[in-house]
Amino acid sequence: MINSSILLKEYDLKVTPQRVAIVEELYSNGHMNIDELYKNLLKKFPSISLATIYKNVNAMLEKVFLKEVKIPEAKSVYELIKEDHSHLVCKSCGMIEDIDLDTSVLQSSLNSNFKIENVEVVFSGICSHCQK
Amino acid sequence: MINSSILLKEYDLKVTPQRVAIVEELYSNGHMNIDELYKNLLKKFPSISLATIYKNVNAMLEKVFLKEVKIPEAKSVYELIKEDHSHLVCKSCGMIEDIDLDTSVLQSSLNSNFKIENVEVVFSGICSHCQK
DNA sequence: CTGGGTGCAAAGTATTTGCATGAAC
DNA sequence: GTTCATGCAAATACTTTGCACCCAG
Image (cartoon, rainbow over the protein chains, first blue to last red):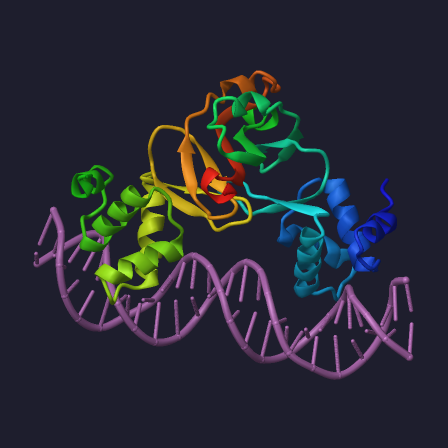
């Protein structure tokens, strides 16, 4: 499990039950879009509002505690910040998986005058389960 | 220059002045978001509507004549379909540049049960001009 | 002619904001 | 007690749709 309260405090975010729940959802599901977060949190907080989700996700993005991942042909998903990694997306079931890639091999072919700060890589295709 | 009319016909799209202008804008600017397209087309067609832009962009996406490129922390841009390539984005001025990359080196490290259909790579950083 | 595109207005969807209340510290 | 989060409602932004009119084929 994860200690959401400590994490939130480290990022200067006041600890509220809603925020703890958001962190725990993202921790257990890996990647979620706004609607998925909202639907899941409704179970625990029947009167939670979408505005609360948006405000918190935006606050966490600003504190660089969450990251937005843009997926081709799909809604953006959010994930807790962790070591750099790339993503594998199944076009059929929507599953998103983290993968470790050595992207440094790509950079060698670039114009050295450009100062690279970040590399995003998303593979799309069909996962083994959906191929059956 | 580009022969927009022939291109549009090849993709089963009726040739209208608005569509020709969209193709020419994208051809000369490489990548544009909806607002940029709208602002530029307004110069040539003072009464063009945003709905026309959306309808045409969507029609061209369906015909696989355009492609949407999702950029971290920025609006999606659209580009004419061409050979596979990756993108370099300047966080400072927003400039987007096409780059050729050999992404096959990345795939070797992946689980072979996943059938990869597409790889998107976006480098973000600061271009040489903005570093000055 | 006929089908489909255009522009406008309205509807729909997504996201943000203002504010009164209540919870965190 | 003070600050800030929450939930609601309203406002704003973004995108799609319906329709009358017009142009491309």
